[in-house]
Length: 424
Length: 166
Image 1 (spheres, chains in turn green, red):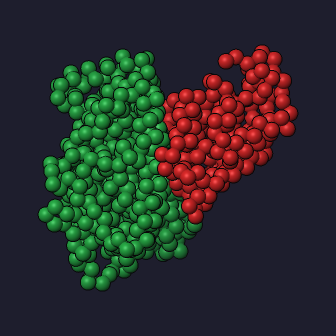
Image 2: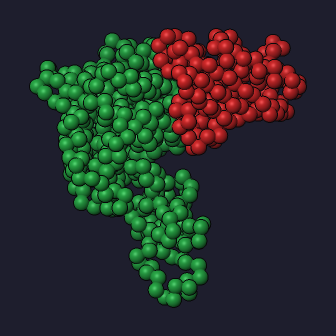
Image 3: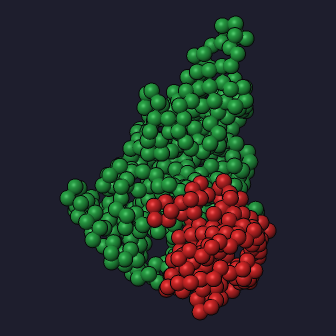
């Protein structure tokens, strides 16, 4: 695509060198976690060719609303076109000499003006103003000099994705089995979903794939998050239900865990820590789900938790709250993480309060659990540098029907990673 | 808990004594004593970095603790299972630029600036921002009814978490 992306052609087979699957053994070489060369291959082979999450349509509800994002390591911005009402995603770079044209994280604008030489673009990307244009003697190609849209932009149920590869399959085909799970999660809301104000912008000194694994890892919950479970018990939660369920490969590297857990779910599962006052509201939501979807689907929506990975770097976890989380490596041993809370619009205030509490106490970086995940992943990264041990073992559950505390869902990710990284 | 109807505006030195005592207790990891500086109806809030005016009843924040959750946070940090903070990091809370306002409804509004350094496992983290307190007099002693911590940070990325009490 660009000169910088031209690379030697002897890189085929990287995936199969690093991910080795046998009958009942699945190993991942730790070079995949520490090597700068592997990271640059990941940029070229994974992040430049797969659909990546940009944001949610509710964040740019009105014409001219915009949000600035880094996607796949690149500064972009997403804006609702004033004329078209379309969701536009542009490379955030002036077509004249390069400066970023969207310089605030969010806002509303009819035009985006590059401050360097004051070239101006409208919300559809069209070049709308060039100071002292006579200097070009009428030769300036205004059409060609519009803001550059990302090669592909599509959205599904409000989730906006983009892809830098114009030849990628359509988004719905790409989502494969993850589509049905997104439907399940979105359908469970009594109204359209929105992103709640307040974002978790944090990071970890760990390889990005450690957070892929961690986000869909049922095995670590009890050991790593002891203090969170103690917190639940202190507030009256019955832990006897435990964490149990199943894991599913959703195709194209996507995977999900679906399981029962002791915590309450604002979507429609009341727990003592929500307080007696919230019980009628939440029981009412549950009755609504049964009415709309029948007992079986309502049970899945209300009672079961879902930790879902959408390859390569989007996590939609529908647990004690609903989080949308994406992350990008900045180095083999560091990633930037952005996590949002998603919730139904115009939610009843008591339910919204329980949802906010549930999110920040478990999922937030100031909560009772996420700091310990950060510690665990950074600890793995430190452990890798010790050397001596070359391979991680990801074979849990290969000898049985995979459970939610097994590693089948991680293998689904790694198989796709291997496929992408085998490309020349 | 109701504060006396007439509240004397404390001197800055009196307020600083309380804030410096809090900082010292946090740095010493004496969290049980730290909790005694707060009223039974206390609230401790840290808004998100991109919404420093965030309202914890409608917006996602980083920390939204009532007194019970403060107690449970202290229990967590006192345990050996708060992995991010076991063993405990070395912390230093610096509190400065203290401004004491006129009492309103029995509460004394206080603003201050802070820097908190954490050093652990060869890694340094820093949080910078402003404190907004509401203090009350309880049996002649100043106590904290509310502490709000607004971070002057465009993201949490240099620190990665808020595992300690700021």
